[in-house]
Image (tube, rainbow over the protein chains, first blue to last red):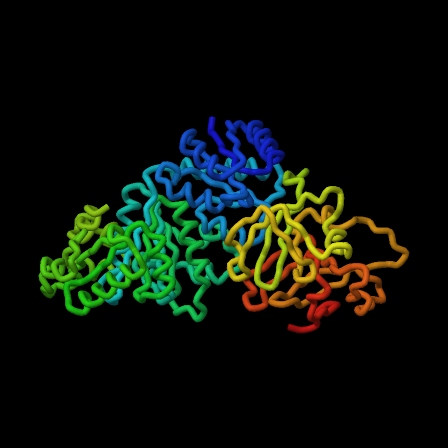
Length: 360
Length: 174
């Protein structure tokens, strides 16, 4: 029997929720405040938490954030149930990394259906701890998109439900490399009216491999979407997928910074040439200024041309940073890009595909 | 089907720059009566959750004791529970109908429906003698500078002294 923790300071509502959920076949634990809810969550390990927002002392968003920060609780299903029933409140719930949101008042059947749906989703996405990797470079042409595409496919090949976000404001090349015809791009979604986690999922385009893609537009966006929509989108996808890979914009703007802040790991890609080295020095300084922990940054050397470049040990010495991965030149990469058949799928034993697989 | 929710009225109170969410135990009264009560200039809140208008979903802080100057609040959004905010079925000898309305208050545009006699008198509607707050049904308040930020409710009670412009009737062009 699944266990649900109800955190709500309204004692009448707490009792009503207990009765409703017990009739629905769930074991129910209740508490009236956030700090006690966190203690009960840690000790009793419920499958799901239903959290009110307007609670004195520690509000529901703070409770959810604390739960998501705790590795033991990060995978728990969380439903926000609140009388703050505006669209901005739904966005705030998703930004806090709740799995879903339901406004009060609600019909008992609606609540039970929502709980059941969330528990079913949990069983399909449960597994290893979730992880988000941002792939980044301030130098164009070093193969960031190719690395991101193959990395995402490598995760998917390990049966980890994965989403790849092409966070360029246009033109993005992820859809091209995967030969996908995306009807909705992240810019469309972010400039749209609906900001629910369901609407984020509906905006994804599925690749034959099972990989889900949030595509970028082909034509550069005329209107830059609000930053909070970017974080809402990333948080929603982090809640749904075991792995999220972000092909980050190649400029140090607010969107790149927000996405980097949401990532667990940054793959900083460089090619062994002077321009790329200089850009990497700049990127490392920018990341440091933004207080991105050094442990989050992993340097990836991508030998993307057949010409010999700078010696990798010399680059490591210059940057004061060792390489996490060294991706070799692969003559198959050019044709793979042209055919829209990434190496990880078309030639998984090729040197580049093998090197990326070894890193996941 | 019966809805499950709190017995207290949840209201979003808007001043020029802040959103105050609160849950009120009305003790037998309705919110409009409390707001229109001229014997007190203040509205005491049991608990207030404060947000800034530019980030209205984010709760800055909550306070167990707070007070609002009624004359300085712009409007109050009641998402649901209109029966706790307004007396229902008021008997009247004058035929009243629903009028579409567009109202501006500082930083916000509000659309919805007001109830008024068929021969509507806007001056009478704006008079603050008896009722300081005008009820707008099925209403939406949009931040003028960012229309993506909206607050909707079964009812919005608007402070007449905050109203800058009130337009009645269907708009004829965009």
